[in-house]
Image (cartoon, rainbow, N blue to C red; front, side, top):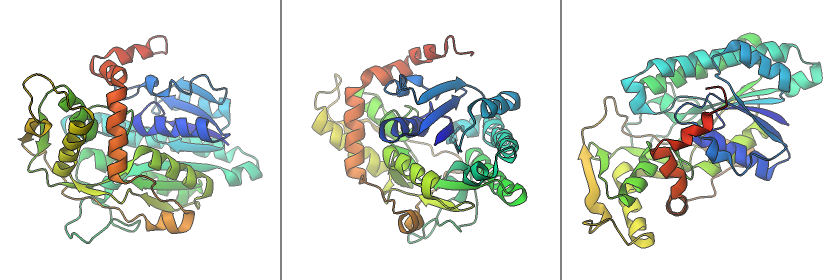
Length: 354
């Protein structure tokens, strides 16, 4: 397949690109605006492949998006481009409305026009795969409850509301125009190449540097954690075997309280990096509780039985195995995250139109 993938310089997108190039015969056209979270250094291992190419394009630019479809003639669209940080959406929701809602509309419109121009055989095999989040469902009160594909939407933050809106647009383009779409909603991802503003990489890097480990509220918020490479495998399963018009929830079967995640990170750093910055006796001593964020959902948990039963996917990593791999990666790849922290990674944008 020739796969047009949006947001391929981001955390999850780059994992999918690496999987496609390293483990399949498919080719991928990566289009990414290269906002602050887009990092081409995450793709250094595949950049020389003849089956990979990159275009710096904003999905809100309808003219350029239409040209991309015309130039590359993709068989599949995998739409991962999104603004995704909840705190940033609270402080400045406009970018989330523009990218996640308007950008998805522009991409759907271009995909529809392109799809309508295809010969019947290619038209029937075309797919538009929209990658979304479990946060569209809101939160869960009953400890036994799980998000299913039929759970009503109840987003809490500007971020999750914008993703819920984009999900609705994708379903509308399927029902109204017949565009063959599929949607996946995933739980919290973690793993290598994760941008340091997110919980797990922030805690790892802060601990290494002897900085406070800020935990919202009492840290009892529960998330289901999904190793990013498991997620990438699931997305490829859906795009190759998923049924048109369906939604699949993707989860890691790893519900953890935030405070327990942070404590486990500290435990593993004691094991793998016992030498600490001056004045630090235990990594756990760096844990600091801070005021909770507005509208903070208490618990997310996904029922991923549908994708397991219908497509045969289930995660390979437990949280314990995945978090240890993640910590070892950050300890071995300080050059990558140091360049993110000091901003030098953004020099990748020079000469690429930004």
